Length: 425
Ligand SMILES: Nc1ncnc2c1ncn2[C@@H]1O[C@H](COP(=O)(O)OP(=O)(O)OP(=O)(O)O)[C@@H](O)[C@H]1O
Ligand SMILES: [Mg+2]
Image 1 (cartoon, rainbow, N blue to C red):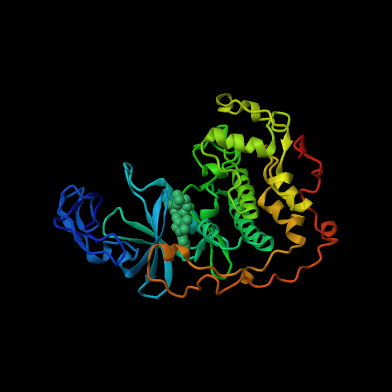
Image 2: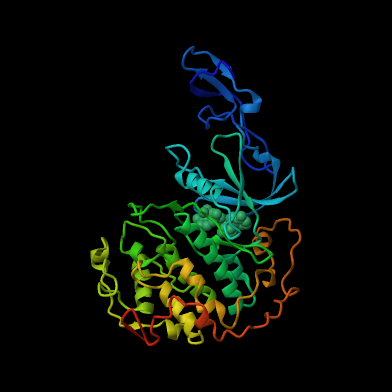
């Protein structure tokens, strides 16, 4: 392309075919002159004003074209994109194809999509969903993330499971989430939207953190960030009270909510509004104060709320069957002061994961029907249907005695009769 001096514009050609959906869709002709500019067009030189047609080989850059994928069915639609199950017709591999949502974009490519792509490309860990490549449609607006396909997300699984997860399965899931998070946090990445629908699971029992549309890298000391992050039920109190700095502790609060949800088989803090969310947190943990959380009184939105006085920590009465180590772990994740909250690394050392019932091995996790594919009425292959595949017997439970002495439990200094100044109830 030797004559390509800096170019001023890409001029759309008339009657451009617009084909930005995977191959199943019809090819449509777009006669609208105001339609989005497509990649096939004319380049105009700044210097000479001359135009030239973009060579066919260069229209898509180095990205493959989305029509090389056969769309099987839609598996999810969220705030930032639609997700399809698709087959790569070159390799036959089943993948997840997430279309980057471009609605109302004034300033080019949406920042959520850019962050998701750049962060996922920089990550390589078995508990983080793998971004295989980015593919494009003909319209400049159609960009798809090709990701490894995971058979389940924990939200639809929890909604459809006939039997809840056993405690050893819950431990297996949580350990994997914590390993993924430890990896992210060590690389200065905060996920900022952890919740069960963003945790995927393969048929081999491997849990993967997904959906990096709100993820950000952070610096030390932390810079200001927007406060509208994390789905309400999983949102840490410092965000609810308007803290401008986000730390990895906001992910750890969400981990506490997820652990609670898996253990009690329903969302732990399902607030309807921000006010209701704060009420639910206070009901469970007691009213925060500057005695246990020095920054509390200076949080920007504190004056917007009238906080109920509630002197009890009710975690123990909510989970009466949980061991002392389990209660300690939950309480450590629900420290009001983000500085004191458990880190992923600390949680992984908790006695809870080393005592009976021992965490099951991922490969011993049961497989489940793929409800998302069933619901969409799609063609389904290789699916084990419900009932035919009961959970395997629990693995032999190792005696955990003595472990708490040999492996330090970072939460063991918390006394068992009170927490953050509140008496257990
Ligand atoms: N790699 C994947 N394999 C299988 N399913 C996936 C994959 N990625 C996403 N999904 C499904 O699509 C859903 C939405 O994906 P994702 O969370 O990435 O998009 P989103 O638009 O950011 O969603 P939301 O705003 O609802 O959190 C997930 O909950 C999951 O069910
Ligand atoms: Mg999501």
